[in-house]
Image (cartoon, rainbow, N blue to C red; front, side, top):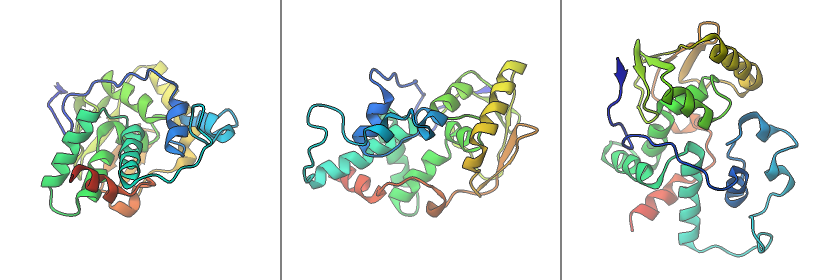
Length: 221
């Protein structure tokens, strides 16, 4: 039985990219790793042109406070692959949680099953992880989950299942990105294509270079 209920951001629709994802990295001034292992090679467009796209990309202007806040929000949206409505709903859920809103927002995003699939090194990128989830290859506590925004809990056991072609691809992913490492709030058995959420991630365990307090300021206006 597939788990298909709404969770932290509504029913997921795969965001269609109508422009090169490399332009998104250049616009945010950092690698967002949207192309997986390619981002670590000399083919990475950001490595060759680390300035904003467009005619005036090399011009340096002092951004306004609003521009800084907006850029931080866009950066996080693009890293996790969310649409604006999904991101706003996730933020509202973070506001209702006990604790610091910005940190709770990042915690929720990290606990999305598509991100967990990526963190377990089953996929080379988050877009690839999202496809694996959408195609029904991920199980949580023996139940199939095909909604990328599904939020995992402490103690949840994740299992990847699929045909030989998929498992070979995942093995290749593990070999290519295994050095990326699995965060300490997760455990993984790559031989069995399984993992477990041993606890909720803390802010210092979320390697996202973002000032989340600026996002809170943006939505507080």
